[in-house]
Image 1 (cartoon, rainbow, N blue to C red):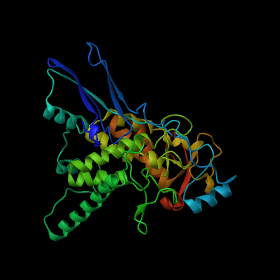
Image 2 (cartoon, rainbow, N blue to C red; image 1 turned 90 degrees about the vertical axis):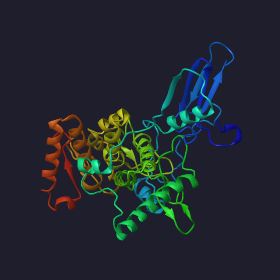
Image 3 (tube, rainbow, N blue to C red; image 1 turned 135 degrees about the horizontal axis):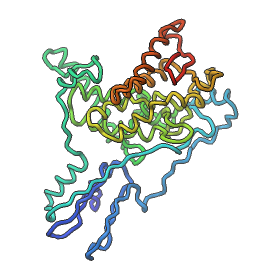
Image 4 (spheres, helix red, strand yellow; image 1 turned 30 degrees about the vertical axis):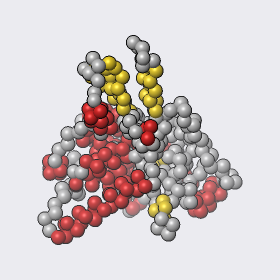
Length: 388
């Protein structure tokens, strides 16, 4: 609707006659550029609409790795590079093969040609579909997301100050999305990792911080702030992030499935493939609040995720050693076990499977028996039973 004037088109149109027709749209159309719409033979009885998720007039997708190795021929040299650039490089790991992205298309059959105001309302509904949500007080009583949060209350000067500070944090990021143009087919929904206060930019290829990829638990922060505030704009940003980080930052098939990739200029560029990135802890909010079936699929993908560590050790460059038994893996308590516990807890909640409950309890009981408990750091782990 605004494309001809250089604005941001909603990606919604109508094709028909005064007696009725079809309205169509691509959600997050301009945010996920380069999408486009084409209409052909509109003067004939039979016409064609094509909703392009990647426009044929755009440049081809560039998904190749940009890293040339910088002469890093072995693990020692790769670790030296990591210390300098904060990027974990290893040949063959910077691959997009197995990542995914979900797009949403809408079609409405209408009894008559909509006027301009109706078409605008239709576009708004397709871009931001109405959603029923419970009040924060009801969500807090349900305790599905734990007890360590509460609904917003500005009933004292201290609380008002705290609420203002929380709002400032969110609105700063919300403004940065627009100011820094954090948009695009493979990027929309994510934010950057580290701010450079000296140069007033987000660190990108300088230090290779770039896209956050859930590294700093940004997903959890947004979801808990939504639960606390009940703000619709917070929900929309958290939803977009969950869509992105659960799809683009995670492998859904192939060698690295179902692990995720650490922060990088390319969402899949870093050679650190980890469960902490693909953890369902970041996804279960959207599933429980909306019953989104695609998110449910992503949750199920992770149930046996620990088995992937038998062939892809996250700490292989810093001394982590695989067990001699091929059925076991070496599991780090902080970055790995938290993700395993989250997926088994969620699978037990969703499906009522006692086997998942048993694995979860076994892991907790044997973890605390380690020489230094949680601070032992890691131990050999049997994914079949959940025992360390």
